[in-house]
Image (cartoon, rainbow, N blue to C red; front, side, top):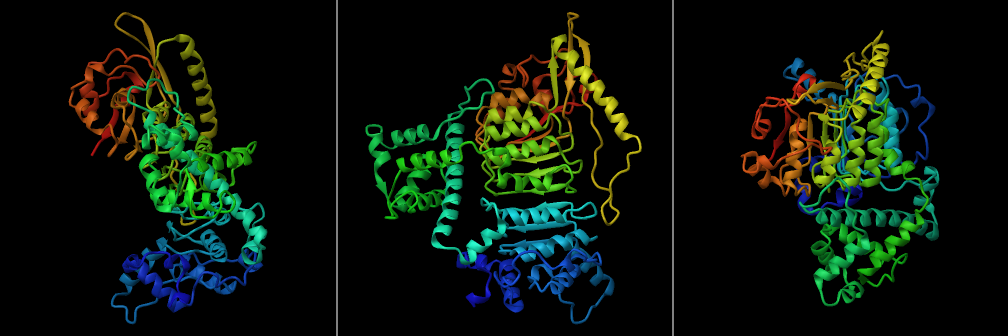
Length: 579
C-alpha cells in the first residue's frame, strides 16, 4: 500500500488519514497508479506539441488530453470526474460538470514538474477555470514561475491560492539541481544542504529577532522608529530569564532535542516545530558534531556565519522573494492571491512592497496570513500604498506586526491634515500633473477581458485630492486625501499592544481594521466606550485633529458621520473589528 501512496500523504499522522478528502485522494492515487516520481522519464521540457496545443476551453478535458499527448501520467485531482452510470437529469449533470471545471483544488499532493508544465499550458487555453487552489503541494520556485507563465492575457483564472507552500532556495541551474537530486555525489548533496541550512538559519534568526523586538515594543514606546533587537541580545535576555545568576552557563549548556525545544519555546516564543528544525540544523555536521546535543550559544555563532556567507548579496534579487512576487507583477491577470503559511518574512515582504508599488491594475486582494511579517516588512507594504490605489483587501493576520508596523501601514491611507503651505503646494502641483496624465491615458481606454469574455476588475486611475480650508481663527490648513481604495486590513493575532496608538489612527482611515485577538482589544473596547476618548490626539504624522468637526471622538469611532470637510468628508474613520 505504501508504494502506491504519494509521499506527502505518508507524512501525515495516522489520525489525519481519516479526513475524507485525503482518503479520497489516497484511493484515487491507488486506482490511477500515480505516485511521485512516476513522470521521471520526462527530464526537462515537454515535447514541442505542448507549445502548439489548442485546447477546447474545458480545463480538465484539456489537461487530460495534453497529458496523454505528452506521455505525462496525470493525477486524478486534475482529471474530469468519471460520468455517472445513469444521468437522471442531463441539465443538472451539465451544471455539475461546469461547476467542477470552474475551480481546481488540490491538497497535500507532492506535485512534480511535468504535471505543473501540463498545468501551465492547460491554464493558458482554458475558458472555464476561475479558481486554482494548491494547498501544501510542495511547489518549488521553478514550478511557481511555470504557473506564472500560464497566467496569460486570455487566462480565466482570477483567484490563486498557494497556501502552506514555503519555498526553498532554488539552485542557479534547475537542470543541475535535478541531476544532483537524482545522482549527485555526497559532496554535492552536502553543499546543497548547507546552502539551504544557511538560508533557514538566517530566516529563523530574523524571526527570533522579530519576536524579541515585538515583545520589546511596550505601549509606552513613542514615535514610529522600528525597534530591532539583535539575536545576541535576544539570546542573552532568554538566558537571564532562565537563570539570572548564571546566564553564561545557560548559553553554554549542551541540551538534547526535547530540552532544547522546550527552552526555545518558553524563552524565545519559538514554535516547537521550528525549534526542532533549528536543533537538526545546528546538530548537523556542517555546524555541530551530530551528537544529539546543542548549546544555545551555537545558534548565535551559526547565524553569524550564515549571514557572513550572504554578505554583499543583493536582497532585491532574492530568488525566493522573486518567485512569490512574480504572480502579482504589473502584467498579472490575477484578482485575488493568497500565500497563507508560506514562511514569508522580511525579505519576501519587502519584495511584495516593491511589486505592489508598481501594481497590476487587477489585483484587489492579497492574503498573507500566518507568516513572519515584522514591522520592517509592514513598513515596506505601507510605502506601496503611496502608489497602489487598486488593492482593496490586505490580510496580515497571525504575523509579528506591532503598533509601530500598524502606523507605517496607515501612513499613506485615508486623510492627512497639513498646516504648512510649503508642504501643501508641491503636493497640489504633483496632483495636477497626475490628473493631466490620467486624462491622456483614459482616452481610448478599453477594459480588458479574459478568454471567456468576462471583464477583469479594474477600478481605473485614482488621483488623491488636497483641498484648502480655514479654521475658526482664519488660519489655513489643507486636507490631503490619499489612498482610500483599501477597504479592509486584517491584523488579528498580531502583538499590537498600544491601544492609544491605534485609537489615534482611527479617525483618519476608511474601511475596516480587524484587530481580533490582539493584546490591545480590551483597552480599545474601553476607549470605544468613551473612557479615555479625550486623551486621543494627533494623526499618523503627529498633526492635530482638523477644525470644523462637531463630532466627538466616540461618534467618529461608532458612527458613519465624518468629522472632515470637502472630499475628505468620505473619510468616516476605521471601523474597528475587535471580536
